Image (cartoon, rainbow, N blue to C red; front, side):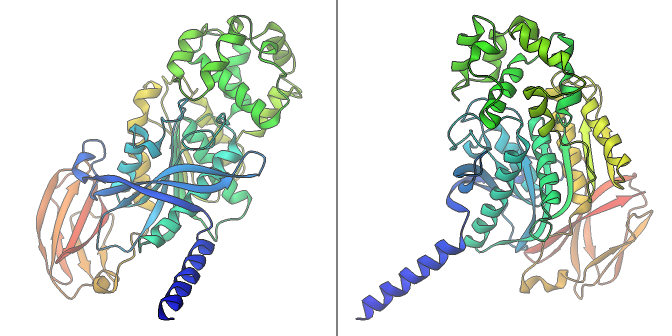
Length: 469
C-alpha cells in the first residue's frame, strides 16, 4: 500500500512538472569553460560558464507547433542566485549543424556573453539545428518567436537547476543576428510583453534592418556582390513563408542554376560553397524578367518580392528602451547605411536613446569582435546586477560612490572589511587590497577609463563597473 501511495505521489509530481514546463522539452550539458579562456576576447570575463543544449516548443512560420533547439550558457557562480538574461542571435549559416546548440564558434560567443555575468540564450532558429525544413532566412517574426520561446525554455531550465533570472533581458546579435535581435525587440514592444521580458536594452550589430531599401539596392544596382548565395537564401525562404514568390525554380533562376543551386540548400552545405557556384552579379543567375519586374516596381513596391522585404523591415519604429547599433564602413556583406537609416528613423519617431556607432573601416568578418565587445560593455552599464542568496545579504545595501570617480571612491553598506580587486578594460589587475567599512579607495594614479571592481567577503563576491574620469 505504501509503495502505491509513493507511486501515485510521484506521478502527480511528474504531471505537475510537465504542466509547468510548457516550453522546455530536454536539456543536455555540453561542458564547463573557464573564464580565463575568454579574457583575450572579453577582458570583463570573470565567470566560468556551463553550456547546455536545449530543445523547446515554439511555433512555425504558419503558427503551428514545432520543436526547435538552442544553447543556454549559465555562469558558474555561488554568490548569485539570479542573473540577467542576454540573448545572442547568430549570423547567417546554411548548414543545420553550424549553430550554437552544437557547441561551435557561435556558442563561443554566447559563452563570452555569459562570462561577463549573464545567462545567455542563443536560439538556433527555425530550419536549423533540430528543427526541420528550410530556414526562413531574415523572416522577422519567426526570428522573434524562436528567441522569445528560447528565453521561456531557458527560464524553465534555470528553475529545474534551482536557479533563476531577475527578469531583465538584453538583446544582442550580429549580421542576420542583428536583424533577429532587432526583430525580437520590436516584437516584444509591439505585443506589449514587457511584463514578461523587462528589456533593458538592445545591441544589434551589422544587421540588414532595411531590407526593402538599403539591402534591396543590391538587386537594383546589379553590382558585384560578395555573397550572391544570400539572394537565393532570401528568395527560397520567402517562398517558404509566403508561398507567392515563384512556382518553380526556373521562374527565378537561369539555367543551369535553377537545377544546380537548390540541392545545396538541404542543410548539409555551407554558404561559401554556394557563393562559389554563382556569378557575383545578380543578372548572371536571376531571370531577366525577375530583375526587370523588381526594378520597374521600385516605387509602388507591389511585387511579391517587394512585399516580402517590406514585411520584414525592422528599422522604422520607436524603441522604448536604449538601443546601440554597431557597424563597420568596409562591410562587404551588410551595407552599414542600414544602421544609419535605422538611427535616423527611430530618432525621427521620438526615440530618446538610440545611436548607431561606427566601429571602424573593417570588413564584415573583422567587425564582429569590436561590435560584440561594445555590446557587452553596454550591457554591463544597464544591468542591475545579480540577486544574492540569504548568506550574501551583506551585498544588498552595498554602494560604491561617486561613480564616475575622479580620485577617491567610497564603499559603504558593509559591516565587514572586504577584499577588493580593480581590473581595467584590458583585463589587467591594477589594484588589490582591503577596504574597511565605509572605507575609501584612492585611484588618483590610474588613467581614465572603465574598470571592474571586485568586492569579496569569504567565498562570495560581487563585481561592479566603475568609471574613472
